[in-house]
Length: 184
Image (cartoon, rainbow, N blue to C red; front, side):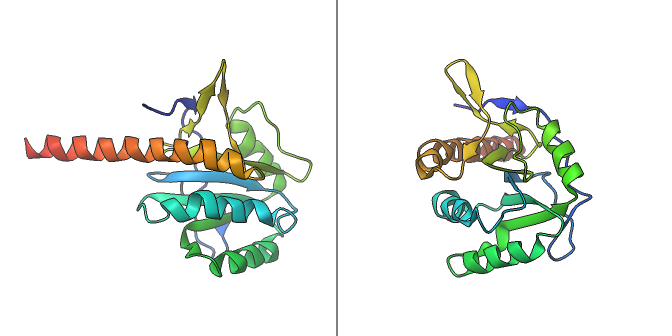
């Protein structure tokens, strides 16, 4: 079983920096991508849901990361979220990048989603991006499920947990095939 591709080859994030001033890339990583919006602390429960249901179970996978795109000027709110996460887990694969809101909107548009960003330039949804920068999702009835609602623990636990397992299994299978091919 494979997780369908919703949008092929979304752009990378190379021009935006994280809290430590380093660039963050989606290349060759399985990424959970989110858009924080301006009200990061108001939505902190969403990050803790995501941490407990998805991050903690998969953080040891070498090429797995969480990337949240946040508006410039929200750095102090992000520091507070990271401090709270650090009390619960090793938060080293939680990466926040900062961009002007116009860039955030333009980037979101490249995902070609039906859903829109809120007026705060955020969304409660997160998205699975594969190592080739393809947006992946599941097909429900006649349409694709584009994202996973972080304010719904059952959405994260029931659907996203399964879909992350599927994408990780795809890469384990590909790795086994590549290793078998090398031995021939």
